[in-house]
Length: 196
Image 1 (cartoon, rainbow, N blue to C red):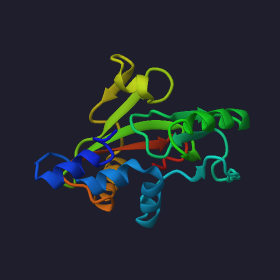
Image 2: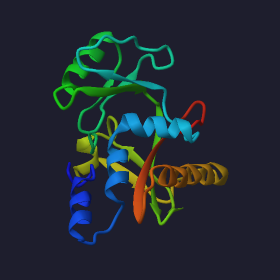
Image 3: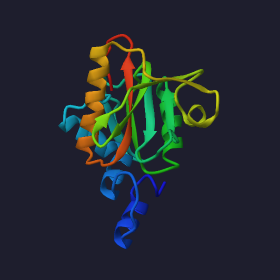
């Protein structure tokens, strides 16, 4: 956790220790999904409709989110604390689980489609990788258990869509003040061909 949220990078900066990857401020921004969603909206980077909810405070699920939806801990990584829910009872249970990690959670529209990952080095996007879990979504198990996911590089996408997705990855890199290298993940809605 401390290596993802910028704490170790901040310590290294204070001690004059050199390291690779982005700095502490950018790392902290990237770990907070609430802040990144706001920054994406401000920069016209597509992000699924969603809301941030607080533990113990009432909320109303917007029509733009609906079901199915995803519940995510606000500052988690590696898909820990991420749940796909199909109705109100599942939503309540998922929020109870998410709030065991922290007091904020994101609820956003579930994008049904294909998943992609794009590495960006020094602001330039590399070839796109398609990520296809054999079952379920790209959760912790499918990320780290060998044989759970098929990865295809370069992804089989039309050239125009490839350029657009790489452009958005570069926009994210810039918007969040990243340096050196980073990775951005995208979902492509198979019906609308919109990406998030």
